[in-house]
Image 1 (cartoon, one colour):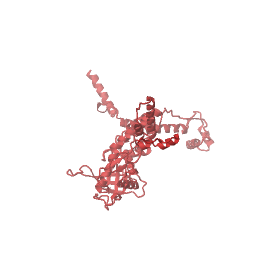
Image 2: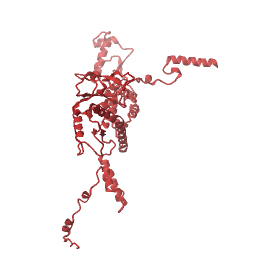
Image 3: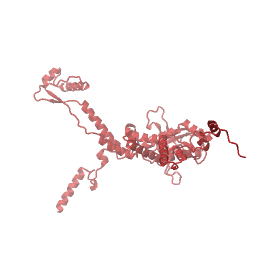
Image 4: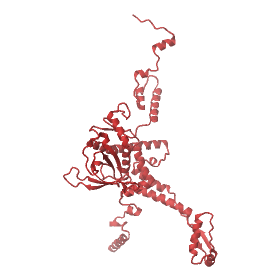
Length: 459
Protein backbone atom coordinates (compact mmCIF):
# COMPACT_ATOMS: atom_id res chain seq x y z
CA UNK A 1 0.00 0.00 0.00
CA UNK A 2 2.81 2.41 0.89
CA UNK A 3 4.52 1.56 -2.37
CA UNK A 4 1.37 2.55 -4.31
CA UNK A 5 1.13 5.89 -2.44
CA UNK A 6 4.79 6.70 -3.04
CA UNK A 7 4.41 5.97 -6.74
CA UNK A 8 1.39 8.30 -6.89
CA UNK A 9 3.33 11.07 -5.13
CA UNK A 10 6.25 10.57 -7.49
CA UNK A 11 3.96 10.80 -10.50
CA UNK A 12 2.41 14.02 -9.18
CA UNK A 13 5.85 15.56 -8.56
CA UNK A 14 6.84 14.70 -12.11
CA UNK A 15 3.68 16.24 -13.50
CA UNK A 16 4.21 19.31 -11.29
CA UNK A 17 7.64 19.84 -12.81
CA UNK A 18 6.24 19.43 -16.31
CA UNK A 19 3.10 21.57 -15.77
CA UNK A 20 3.88 24.02 -12.94
CA UNK A 21 0.85 26.24 -13.60
CA UNK A 22 -1.54 23.30 -13.36
CA UNK A 23 -0.09 21.50 -10.32
CA UNK A 24 1.27 24.51 -8.41
CA UNK A 25 1.39 23.75 -4.66
CA UNK A 26 -0.91 20.79 -5.17
CA UNK A 27 -3.67 23.08 -6.49
CA UNK A 28 -5.26 21.72 -9.65
CA UNK A 29 -6.73 25.08 -10.72
CA UNK A 30 -5.47 26.71 -13.90
CA UNK A 31 -3.65 30.02 -14.09
CA UNK A 32 -6.22 31.56 -16.41
CA UNK A 33 -4.15 34.65 -17.13
CA UNK A 34 -1.37 32.52 -18.62
CA UNK A 35 -3.70 29.98 -20.19
CA UNK A 36 -5.83 32.56 -22.02
CA UNK A 37 -3.24 35.26 -22.65
CA UNK A 38 -4.62 37.89 -20.25
CA UNK A 39 -2.22 40.45 -18.73
CA UNK A 40 -1.85 40.05 -14.96
CA UNK A 41 -1.49 43.81 -14.44
CA UNK A 42 -2.82 46.64 -16.55
CA UNK A 43 -1.03 49.88 -17.34
CA UNK A 44 -2.58 53.12 -18.52
CA UNK A 45 -1.03 52.59 -21.95
CA UNK A 46 -2.83 49.24 -22.38
CA UNK A 47 -6.16 50.71 -21.28
CA UNK A 48 -5.74 53.77 -23.50
CA UNK A 49 -4.89 51.65 -26.55
CA UNK A 50 -7.90 49.42 -25.93
CA UNK A 51 -10.14 52.49 -25.75
CA UNK A 52 -8.68 53.96 -28.96
CA UNK A 53 -8.75 50.76 -31.05
CA UNK A 54 -11.71 48.74 -29.74
CA UNK A 55 -15.15 49.98 -30.76
CA UNK A 56 -16.99 48.26 -27.92
CA UNK A 57 -14.63 49.71 -25.31
CA UNK A 58 -15.05 53.18 -26.81
CA UNK A 59 -18.84 52.77 -26.85
CA UNK A 60 -18.90 51.74 -23.19
CA UNK A 61 -17.01 54.88 -22.17
CA UNK A 62 -18.45 57.41 -24.61
CA UNK A 63 -22.09 56.42 -24.19
CA UNK A 64 -21.76 56.67 -20.42
CA UNK A 65 -20.34 60.18 -20.72
CA UNK A 66 -22.91 61.26 -23.30
CA UNK A 67 -25.74 60.12 -21.03
CA UNK A 68 -24.24 61.62 -17.86
CA UNK A 69 -23.64 64.94 -19.61
CA UNK A 70 -26.83 64.82 -21.68
CA UNK A 71 -27.40 68.44 -20.63
CA UNK A 72 -25.15 70.90 -18.86
CA UNK A 73 -25.82 71.81 -15.23
CA UNK A 74 -26.28 75.29 -13.76
CA UNK A 75 -24.49 76.64 -10.71
CA UNK A 76 -27.04 78.48 -8.55
CA UNK A 77 -26.74 80.55 -5.42
CA UNK A 78 -29.57 78.65 -3.77
CA UNK A 79 -31.89 75.76 -4.48
CA UNK A 80 -35.28 76.63 -5.87
CA UNK A 81 -38.02 74.67 -7.61
CA UNK A 82 -38.03 74.70 -11.37
CA UNK A 83 -35.09 77.09 -11.71
CA UNK A 84 -33.33 77.02 -15.02
CA UNK A 85 -30.87 79.39 -16.56
CA UNK A 86 -32.56 82.04 -18.62
CA UNK A 87 -35.66 82.35 -16.39
CA UNK A 88 -36.72 85.60 -14.82
CA UNK A 89 -35.52 84.55 -11.34
CA UNK A 90 -31.87 84.12 -12.44
CA UNK A 91 -29.71 86.34 -10.28
CA UNK A 92 -27.06 88.69 -11.62
CA UNK A 93 -24.23 86.53 -10.23
CA UNK A 94 -25.73 83.34 -11.70
CA UNK A 95 -25.93 85.00 -15.10
CA UNK A 96 -22.29 86.10 -14.88
CA UNK A 97 -21.23 82.56 -13.89
CA UNK A 98 -23.20 81.04 -16.76
CA UNK A 99 -21.64 83.42 -19.25
CA UNK A 100 -18.07 83.00 -17.94
CA UNK A 101 -18.34 79.21 -17.79
CA UNK A 102 -19.69 79.30 -21.34
CA UNK A 103 -16.74 81.40 -22.52
CA UNK A 104 -14.31 78.90 -20.95
CA UNK A 105 -16.33 75.91 -22.27
CA UNK A 106 -16.01 74.68 -18.72
CA UNK A 107 -18.74 72.05 -18.80
CA UNK A 108 -17.38 70.55 -22.02
CA UNK A 109 -13.90 70.41 -20.48
CA UNK A 110 -15.32 68.71 -17.40
CA UNK A 111 -17.13 66.15 -19.56
CA UNK A 112 -13.80 65.46 -21.29
CA UNK A 113 -12.08 64.97 -17.91
CA UNK A 114 -14.89 62.64 -16.89
CA UNK A 115 -14.28 60.57 -20.04
CA UNK A 116 -10.54 60.46 -19.38
CA UNK A 117 -11.12 59.27 -15.82
CA UNK A 118 -13.10 56.27 -17.07
CA UNK A 119 -10.20 55.12 -19.25
CA UNK A 120 -7.48 55.64 -16.67
CA UNK A 121 -7.45 55.42 -12.89
CA UNK A 122 -7.99 59.18 -12.73
CA UNK A 123 -7.86 62.34 -14.82
CA UNK A 124 -6.67 65.83 -14.01
CA UNK A 125 -8.23 69.27 -14.39
CA UNK A 126 -5.47 71.87 -14.48
CA UNK A 127 -6.49 75.43 -13.53
CA UNK A 128 -4.85 78.45 -15.08
CA UNK A 129 -5.54 81.45 -12.85
CA UNK A 130 -4.53 85.09 -13.18
CA UNK A 131 -2.28 85.32 -10.12
CA UNK A 132 0.99 86.13 -11.95
CA UNK A 133 2.73 83.10 -10.45
CA UNK A 134 4.40 80.04 -11.90
CA UNK A 135 2.54 76.73 -12.06
CA UNK A 136 4.75 75.22 -9.36
CA UNK A 137 3.79 77.92 -6.85
CA UNK A 138 0.81 77.70 -4.45
CA UNK A 139 -2.24 79.92 -4.99
CA UNK A 140 -3.19 82.50 -2.38
CA UNK A 141 -5.89 84.89 -3.60
CA UNK A 142 -6.83 85.72 -7.17
CA UNK A 143 -8.17 89.13 -8.09
CA UNK A 144 -10.58 89.92 -10.87
CA UNK A 145 -13.51 87.79 -9.79
CA UNK A 146 -14.68 85.29 -12.41
CA UNK A 147 -12.10 86.63 -14.88
CA UNK A 148 -9.43 85.28 -12.54
CA UNK A 149 -10.10 81.81 -13.96
CA UNK A 150 -8.29 81.89 -17.31
CA UNK A 151 -8.35 78.29 -18.60
CA UNK A 152 -9.35 74.75 -17.66
CA UNK A 153 -7.12 71.99 -19.08
CA UNK A 154 -8.24 68.32 -18.87
CA UNK A 155 -5.37 65.82 -18.68
CA UNK A 156 -5.04 62.05 -19.04
CA UNK A 157 -3.52 59.94 -16.28
CA UNK A 158 -0.58 59.32 -18.61
CA UNK A 159 -0.01 63.07 -18.95
CA UNK A 160 -0.32 64.02 -15.27
CA UNK A 161 1.83 62.03 -12.84
CA UNK A 162 2.69 62.58 -9.17
CA UNK A 163 6.32 63.70 -9.05
CA UNK A 164 6.57 64.25 -5.29
CA UNK A 165 4.62 62.98 -2.28
CA UNK A 166 4.16 64.63 1.10
CA UNK A 167 6.03 62.36 3.53
CA UNK A 168 5.87 64.69 6.54
CA UNK A 169 3.74 62.93 9.16
CA UNK A 170 2.96 66.26 10.88
CA UNK A 171 1.64 67.81 7.67
CA UNK A 172 -2.09 68.23 6.99
CA UNK A 173 -1.54 66.80 3.51
CA UNK A 174 0.51 63.79 4.64
CA UNK A 175 0.33 60.97 2.08
CA UNK A 176 -1.02 63.26 -0.63
CA UNK A 177 0.71 64.54 -3.78
CA UNK A 178 3.06 67.44 -3.15
CA UNK A 179 3.80 68.16 -6.80
CA UNK A 180 2.66 66.96 -10.23
CA UNK A 181 4.51 66.57 -13.52
CA UNK A 182 2.43 67.45 -16.60
CA UNK A 183 3.76 66.19 -19.94
CA UNK A 184 1.21 66.94 -22.63
CA UNK A 185 2.98 64.91 -25.33
CA UNK A 186 3.04 61.72 -23.21
CA UNK A 187 -0.30 60.67 -24.73
CA UNK A 188 -1.01 62.95 -27.68
CA UNK A 189 2.15 63.14 -29.77
CA UNK A 190 0.47 65.26 -32.47
CA UNK A 191 0.54 68.46 -30.40
CA UNK A 192 2.92 70.89 -32.08
CA UNK A 193 3.88 72.82 -28.93
CA UNK A 194 3.34 70.46 -25.99
CA UNK A 195 3.48 71.79 -22.44
CA UNK A 196 5.83 70.22 -19.93
CA UNK A 197 5.36 71.69 -16.46
CA UNK A 198 5.74 71.04 -12.77
CA UNK A 199 2.39 71.93 -11.18
CA UNK A 200 1.44 72.63 -7.57
CA UNK A 201 -1.60 70.68 -6.23
CA UNK A 202 -3.46 73.99 -5.69
CA UNK A 203 -3.78 74.22 -9.47
CA UNK A 204 -4.98 70.65 -10.04
CA UNK A 205 -8.36 69.00 -9.48
CA UNK A 206 -8.11 65.19 -9.49
CA UNK A 207 -11.14 63.74 -11.25
CA UNK A 208 -11.79 60.16 -10.14
CA UNK A 209 -14.25 57.98 -8.25
CA UNK A 210 -12.91 59.10 -4.86
CA UNK A 211 -11.09 62.29 -5.80
CA UNK A 212 -7.64 60.72 -5.45
CA UNK A 213 -5.05 59.25 -7.82
CA UNK A 214 -5.73 55.78 -6.37
CA UNK A 215 -8.82 55.07 -8.47
CA UNK A 216 -9.37 52.38 -11.07
CA UNK A 217 -10.30 52.31 -14.73
CA UNK A 218 -13.87 51.54 -15.73
CA UNK A 219 -12.46 49.28 -18.46
CA UNK A 220 -10.45 47.10 -16.08
CA UNK A 221 -13.21 44.66 -14.94
CA UNK A 222 -14.17 43.86 -18.53
CA UNK A 223 -10.69 44.05 -20.07
CA UNK A 224 -10.36 40.26 -20.47
CA UNK A 225 -13.69 40.14 -22.30
CA UNK A 226 -12.48 42.87 -24.66
CA UNK A 227 -9.43 40.73 -25.45
CA UNK A 228 -11.70 37.75 -26.14
CA UNK A 229 -13.80 39.83 -28.52
CA UNK A 230 -10.66 40.91 -30.37
CA UNK A 231 -9.54 37.29 -30.64
CA UNK A 232 -12.87 36.13 -32.07
CA UNK A 233 -13.16 39.07 -34.42
CA UNK A 234 -9.53 38.86 -35.57
CA UNK A 235 -9.54 35.09 -36.03
CA UNK A 236 -12.77 35.25 -38.00
CA UNK A 237 -11.54 38.03 -40.25
CA UNK A 238 -8.19 36.35 -40.84
CA UNK A 239 -9.85 33.00 -41.52
CA UNK A 240 -12.23 34.42 -44.11
CA UNK A 241 -9.36 36.33 -45.70
CA UNK A 242 -7.23 33.21 -45.99
CA UNK A 243 -10.11 31.26 -47.51
CA UNK A 244 -10.67 33.97 -50.10
CA UNK A 245 -7.01 34.76 -50.85
CA UNK A 246 -4.98 31.69 -49.95
CA UNK A 247 -2.07 30.56 -52.11
CA UNK A 248 -2.60 27.23 -53.89
CA UNK A 249 -0.75 24.15 -52.71
CA UNK A 250 1.08 22.49 -55.62
CA UNK A 251 1.24 18.70 -55.44
CA UNK A 252 4.01 17.27 -57.70
CA UNK A 253 3.24 14.00 -59.43
CA UNK A 254 5.91 11.31 -59.02
CA UNK A 255 6.26 11.07 -62.81
CA UNK A 256 6.52 14.81 -63.35
CA UNK A 257 9.46 15.96 -65.45
CA UNK A 258 10.89 18.96 -63.68
CA UNK A 259 13.52 19.63 -66.32
CA UNK A 260 10.91 19.85 -69.09
CA UNK A 261 8.82 22.18 -66.96
CA UNK A 262 11.83 24.41 -66.33
CA UNK A 263 12.62 24.45 -70.02
CA UNK A 264 9.04 25.42 -70.86
CA UNK A 265 9.28 28.33 -68.44
CA UNK A 266 12.65 29.39 -69.80
CA UNK A 267 14.59 28.96 -66.56
CA UNK A 268 17.07 26.52 -65.11
CA UNK A 269 15.99 23.73 -62.77
CA UNK A 270 17.62 25.55 -59.85
CA UNK A 271 15.48 28.67 -60.51
CA UNK A 272 12.24 26.72 -61.02
CA UNK A 273 11.05 27.21 -57.43
CA UNK A 274 11.50 30.99 -57.61
CA UNK A 275 9.71 31.09 -60.96
CA UNK A 276 6.81 29.10 -59.51
CA UNK A 277 6.56 31.56 -56.59
CA UNK A 278 6.37 34.45 -59.03
CA UNK A 279 3.73 32.65 -61.06
CA UNK A 280 1.60 31.90 -57.99
CA UNK A 281 1.93 35.52 -56.86
CA UNK A 282 0.72 36.73 -60.27
CA UNK A 283 -2.07 34.17 -60.16
CA UNK A 284 -3.27 35.47 -56.77
CA UNK A 285 -3.07 39.05 -58.01
CA UNK A 286 -5.91 38.54 -60.48
CA UNK A 287 -8.64 36.09 -61.31
CA UNK A 288 -7.72 35.93 -64.99
CA UNK A 289 -4.08 34.93 -64.61
CA UNK A 290 -2.67 31.68 -66.09
CA UNK A 291 -1.08 29.10 -63.77
CA UNK A 292 1.28 26.66 -65.53
CA UNK A 293 1.49 23.43 -63.48
CA UNK A 294 2.87 20.75 -65.80
CA UNK A 295 2.72 17.44 -63.93
CA UNK A 296 1.27 19.12 -60.80
CA UNK A 297 -2.09 19.53 -59.12
CA UNK A 298 -3.17 22.86 -57.52
CA UNK A 299 -5.23 22.54 -54.32
CA UNK A 300 -6.61 25.05 -51.85
CA UNK A 301 -6.24 24.79 -48.06
CA UNK A 302 -9.56 26.09 -46.74
CA UNK A 303 -10.05 27.00 -43.09
CA UNK A 304 -13.26 25.70 -41.52
CA UNK A 305 -14.66 28.42 -39.26
CA UNK A 306 -17.44 27.93 -36.69
CA UNK A 307 -20.07 30.63 -36.30
CA UNK A 308 -18.43 33.35 -34.17
CA UNK A 309 -21.63 35.00 -32.94
CA UNK A 310 -22.05 32.87 -29.83
CA UNK A 311 -18.44 33.23 -28.72
CA UNK A 312 -18.52 36.96 -29.33
CA UNK A 313 -21.87 37.39 -27.55
CA UNK A 314 -20.58 35.79 -24.33
CA UNK A 315 -17.68 38.25 -24.11
CA UNK A 316 -19.96 41.15 -25.10
CA UNK A 317 -22.45 40.38 -22.34
CA UNK A 318 -19.68 40.08 -19.77
CA UNK A 319 -18.23 43.47 -20.74
CA UNK A 320 -21.68 45.10 -20.67
CA UNK A 321 -22.21 43.69 -17.17
CA UNK A 322 -18.86 45.12 -16.05
CA UNK A 323 -20.03 48.58 -17.22
CA UNK A 324 -23.51 48.25 -15.64
CA UNK A 325 -24.86 48.89 -19.14
CA UNK A 326 -27.62 46.99 -20.98
CA UNK A 327 -26.30 45.22 -24.08
CA UNK A 328 -28.92 46.91 -26.25
CA UNK A 329 -27.67 50.31 -25.10
CA UNK A 330 -24.04 49.31 -25.64
CA UNK A 331 -24.35 48.08 -29.24
CA UNK A 332 -27.54 49.86 -30.27
CA UNK A 333 -29.83 46.84 -30.74
CA UNK A 334 -33.56 47.39 -30.29
CA UNK A 335 -35.43 44.07 -30.40
CA UNK A 336 -38.60 45.03 -28.54
CA UNK A 337 -40.28 48.23 -27.45
CA UNK A 338 -40.94 47.12 -23.87
CA UNK A 339 -37.46 45.70 -23.41
CA UNK A 340 -35.93 48.87 -24.85
CA UNK A 341 -37.94 51.10 -22.49
CA UNK A 342 -36.91 49.05 -19.47
CA UNK A 343 -33.26 49.14 -20.54
CA UNK A 344 -33.41 52.89 -21.08
CA UNK A 345 -34.99 53.42 -17.66
CA UNK A 346 -32.37 51.26 -15.94
CA UNK A 347 -29.60 53.00 -17.86
CA UNK A 348 -30.90 56.43 -16.81
CA UNK A 349 -30.98 55.35 -13.15
CA UNK A 350 -27.42 53.99 -13.40
CA UNK A 351 -26.14 57.29 -14.76
CA UNK A 352 -28.07 59.29 -12.18
CA UNK A 353 -26.30 57.27 -9.48
CA UNK A 354 -22.95 57.79 -11.18
CA UNK A 355 -23.63 61.50 -11.53
CA UNK A 356 -24.58 61.88 -7.86
CA UNK A 357 -21.69 59.85 -6.44
CA UNK A 358 -18.85 60.77 -8.81
CA UNK A 359 -19.51 63.65 -11.17
CA UNK A 360 -21.18 66.15 -8.84
CA UNK A 361 -18.58 65.75 -6.03
CA UNK A 362 -15.80 66.40 -8.56
CA UNK A 363 -17.57 69.53 -9.82
CA UNK A 364 -18.09 70.80 -6.27
CA UNK A 365 -14.35 70.29 -5.63
CA UNK A 366 -13.73 72.95 -8.26
CA UNK A 367 -16.37 75.23 -6.72
CA UNK A 368 -14.70 74.92 -3.32
CA UNK A 369 -11.30 75.63 -4.90
CA UNK A 370 -12.65 78.75 -6.63
CA UNK A 371 -14.12 79.90 -3.31
CA UNK A 372 -10.71 79.49 -1.68
CA UNK A 373 -9.07 81.53 -4.42
CA UNK A 374 -11.66 84.30 -4.10
CA UNK A 375 -12.91 83.78 -7.65
CA UNK A 376 -16.34 82.80 -6.29
CA UNK A 377 -17.88 84.18 -3.08
CA UNK A 378 -18.36 81.71 -0.25
CA UNK A 379 -21.95 80.50 -0.41
CA UNK A 380 -24.00 77.33 -0.08
CA UNK A 381 -23.85 76.70 -3.84
CA UNK A 382 -26.36 74.43 -5.51
CA UNK A 383 -25.87 72.47 -8.76
CA UNK A 384 -29.08 72.29 -10.77
CA UNK A 385 -29.10 69.42 -13.28
CA UNK A 386 -31.94 67.94 -15.31
CA UNK A 387 -33.15 64.58 -13.97
CA UNK A 388 -32.20 61.80 -16.41
CA UNK A 389 -35.08 59.63 -15.19
CA UNK A 390 -37.70 62.27 -15.95
CA UNK A 391 -40.32 61.16 -18.46
CA UNK A 392 -40.45 62.68 -21.92
CA UNK A 393 -43.27 65.06 -22.85
CA UNK A 394 -44.99 62.37 -24.95
CA UNK A 395 -44.93 59.98 -21.99
CA UNK A 396 -46.35 62.70 -19.70
CA UNK A 397 -49.17 63.50 -22.13
CA UNK A 398 -49.99 59.80 -22.47
CA UNK A 399 -50.19 59.48 -18.70
CA UNK A 400 -52.42 62.56 -18.44
CA UNK A 401 -54.68 61.17 -21.17
CA UNK A 402 -55.11 57.91 -19.26
CA UNK A 403 -56.00 59.86 -16.11
CA UNK A 404 -58.68 61.77 -18.03
CA UNK A 405 -60.03 58.52 -19.51
CA UNK A 406 -60.25 57.05 -16.02
CA UNK A 407 -62.44 59.96 -14.92
CA UNK A 408 -64.76 59.37 -17.88
CA UNK A 409 -65.07 55.64 -17.16
CA UNK A 410 -66.08 56.31 -13.54
CA UNK A 411 -69.24 58.10 -14.65
CA UNK A 412 -70.85 61.41 -13.78
CA UNK A 413 -70.17 62.81 -10.33
CA UNK A 414 -67.14 60.64 -9.62
CA UNK A 415 -63.75 62.28 -10.00
CA UNK A 416 -60.62 60.17 -9.49
CA UNK A 417 -58.12 62.79 -10.69
CA UNK A 418 -58.64 66.55 -10.44
CA UNK A 419 -57.68 68.98 -13.20
CA UNK A 420 -54.78 70.20 -11.08
CA UNK A 421 -53.40 66.67 -10.68
CA UNK A 422 -53.61 66.01 -14.41
CA UNK A 423 -51.83 69.27 -15.22
CA UNK A 424 -49.15 68.48 -12.63
CA UNK A 425 -48.35 65.21 -14.42
CA UNK A 426 -47.50 67.19 -17.58
CA UNK A 427 -45.50 69.69 -15.53
CA UNK A 428 -47.94 72.59 -15.76
CA UNK A 429 -49.05 74.86 -12.92
CA UNK A 430 -52.74 74.84 -11.86
CA UNK A 431 -54.97 77.22 -13.78
CA UNK A 432 -56.18 80.39 -12.10
CA UNK A 433 -59.90 81.17 -11.95
CA UNK A 434 -59.48 83.75 -14.69
CA UNK A 435 -57.86 81.17 -16.96
CA UNK A 436 -60.42 78.50 -16.12
CA UNK A 437 -63.39 80.65 -17.21
CA UNK A 438 -61.60 82.59 -19.95
CA UNK A 439 -63.77 80.96 -22.65
CA UNK A 440 -67.06 81.33 -20.72
CA UNK A 441 -69.37 84.11 -22.11
CA UNK A 442 -69.95 87.18 -19.94
CA UNK A 443 -73.43 88.24 -18.78
CA UNK A 444 -73.61 90.91 -21.50
CA UNK A 445 -72.65 88.40 -24.19
CA UNK A 446 -75.33 85.99 -22.93
CA UNK A 447 -78.05 88.70 -23.02
CA UNK A 448 -77.05 89.79 -26.50
CA UNK A 449 -77.23 86.20 -27.70
CA UNK A 450 -80.71 85.65 -26.15
CA UNK A 451 -82.04 89.11 -27.00
CA UNK A 452 -83.26 89.75 -23.43
CA UNK A 453 -83.20 92.89 -21.30
CA UNK A 454 -81.52 93.00 -17.93
CA UNK A 455 -83.93 92.52 -15.03
CA UNK A 456 -84.71 95.41 -12.73
CA UNK A 457 -82.79 95.32 -9.53
CA UNK A 458 -84.81 94.72 -6.39
CA UNK A 459 -84.76 97.63 -4.04
